[in-house]
Amino acid sequence: MARIVMKFGGTSVADIERIKNVANRVKREFESGNEVAVVVSAMSGATNQLVAWCNQVAPLHDAREYDAVVATGEQVTTGLLAIALQELGVEARSWCGWQLPIRTDGVHGKARIMSIETDEMIARMGKGEVAVVAGFQGLGPDNRIATLGRGGSDTSAVALAAALHADRCDIYTDVDGVYTTDPRIVSVAKKLDKITYEEMLELASVGAKVLQTRSVEMAMKHRVRVQVLSSFEDKPGTLVCDEDEIVEKELVSGIAYSRDEAKITLVRVADRPGVAASIFGPLADAAVNVDMIVQNVSEDGKSTDLTFTVGNADLERAKKVLEDAKGTLGFEKLLADPNVVKVSVIGVGMRSHAGIAQKMFQTLASEGINIQVISTSEIKISVLIEEKYTELALRALHTAYGLDAA
Image (tube, rainbow, N blue to C red; front, side, top):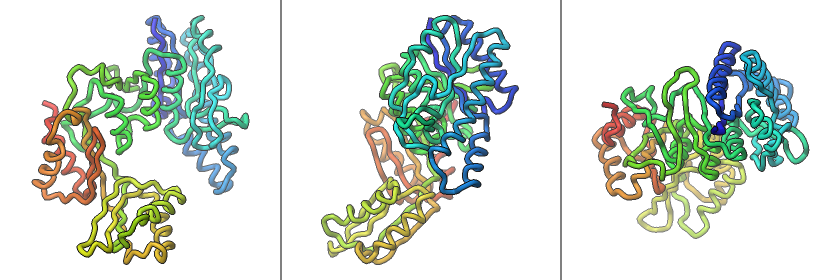
């Protein structure tokens, strides 16, 4: 007997028919002899509606009351799925986050999970009951409902799998696995059978929407084996696992991209100790996250041009912070460009092979694509290019690294 956590997102439980479909999947897993806990999101579109209502009542609303409102979407789904399972003859019980409880910190609206109490749930599962748990929510230290932020149901599922010492966490979504790149852009993209935690984390952080970044971080920390599967097709998915489980590691596993990038260049900044801190400190204080950074020193050594990227949503705020501090920072002018995209090549094979970066740069050069900024990690190389070249770059790199499906 295995212990399995199954997670279903909003599209998987979008209406009653799909909830019944989920119930049948859960029943099959249960009848194969496994202990099963199910984590569900709100029905597709429900959370957006609840958020909109909060904003209509008061744009600057109390975050604690906001959480009380938006958490109701998952509560509806858990009750409906438990009823659907009971109708199929499967013993089931719904659990809200506060009932276990899933304990979080006190940051309402984007809380982090601190611990999960599972004794009663484990006892009930051992007696043949399926647990249906509301994702995205928990209980804060103030004894009030706290939500984990958008996409938090993935994190709920992985955290529950870790707390239950589950054999696997199956995440069902509207795609049938993790691909070498976006198959909507590159039709010859291949589905991966397995991918390491590190690779999946890098893919998630640079734009791949298959899994939420925090859920991958948690899976890697607790070594929870995660499988990505389709809710709508019975076919093998992709296993996210430890590197040791993958016998033959690919040189490059995937090409990802993120359109959520904007470039800022500060021209002729004084080149003196502490200038970078004086620029990035106020941005951090304004909650602006800075990603890629490149610095060019002028010939006279007295000034520098500093280029960095921020999220598109933070561009205007970043510009205002920097313009307000122009007298102190002493730059000549600020240039902003929202029409850029970050393209990343990812693979654990980079650790032991040279020439990955050279191939990336040569491939882009041969297509006439100029690289504006470069950043690297142990298993990732990212470049910033003009947005209009996104599809060309993805296709060219996918072919160059031998990732095209046969």
